[in-house]
Amino acid sequence: MRILLVGSGNRAKAYATFLKDEITYVSDVDCEKSKMLIKEYSLINAVSIQDYKTCGDVDAIIIAVPDYVHEEVIDWAFGENVPILLEKPVAVTGESLERIHKKGAASENGIILGFTLRYTFMYKKILELLKKNAIGEIISVEAAETLDPVHAAKFFRRWHRFSENSGGLLNTKCSHDMDMINQIIPGRPRYISSFGSNKIFNAGKGEDKCTEDCIEYSTCRFVDMNVYKYSSADTLICPYNVSSDIVDHQVVAMEFDSGTTAVFTVSMHSDKGDRHVHIHGTTGSIKASFHNQKVFLLKTGEKNLIFEPESTSGSHGGGDEVLCREFLKCIKLASSENQLEDGITASAMALAADESRKSGKVVDMTLFADYMYNKK
Image (cartoon, rainbow, N blue to C red; front, side, top):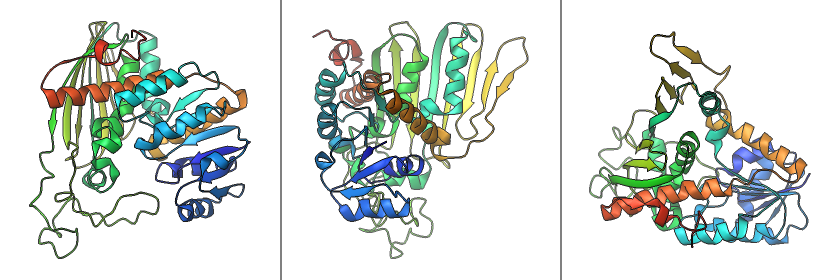
């Protein structure tokens, strides 16, 4: 099996870990970085190339480049007629989503999205329970993601801090949360409204660089002592004083055409990273927390049921490993489901939320995402 891995940054590490024997080429404009990945992860069958277009025949392509390069690479990859694994988010603008949708919607080779949450015990169990109608008709959903301080600051220490590169915090960080809400709730998102801002990371609270020269250094929650080999994060950047246009907290309210409502909150100022979800139905509710992946089925007058995994180890709660296994199946079959439309919907929801946040108006998703629903 011959897999081309385009990109050798932070997300490429997961694929190097679980697909190491199948990766034949690692492409990066920085050849030293791709060579380092090959060496450190013992990709004994792989060679480093600078231009992904020179790889020759391959059986599959993984796209793990920065968000703003996704369209350029997948546009080429569509022409190779092989299964594709595209990291989230699909793209960073509505226009880019439209172009990708037109070219890839009919792909028969399989397009898997890097929505690792789909492959975790927690969300697989939730969807299994909902499929069995365990809580009746879904009335509303509450979901949230919290980032620990060091993780949060990384978004201000790399290219993600500019929305032209990432599509905004909600798109680059939480598009797979949008995807899970869309998987949980029947129908399509109809109206979206959102509020948020950059409340904390404003200039004037630190020095030009994050060093011991800063009087806040010893008490600052955002000091990052880690060494990153593959991430573009620069730990010397002070998240307070760097130029950026993304938010550090945001809340999104959604109504679906089924009448079900949902609310999602992302915050960069929590003591630890986690995800929470609470699904309310006509006959009960489901609650879950990502840090231990326990799923609670709560029904009035009945004993609560608790479902928990044997292990929660592994990157993204074990989701990366399962995602890679699913992609291998896709390659062996030479086709699989086309998840592209789901990925475009998730990014469209995130972009619509930012449109609402900036304009102060409710966004009509049936107009905002016409390219998705073929109504043009």
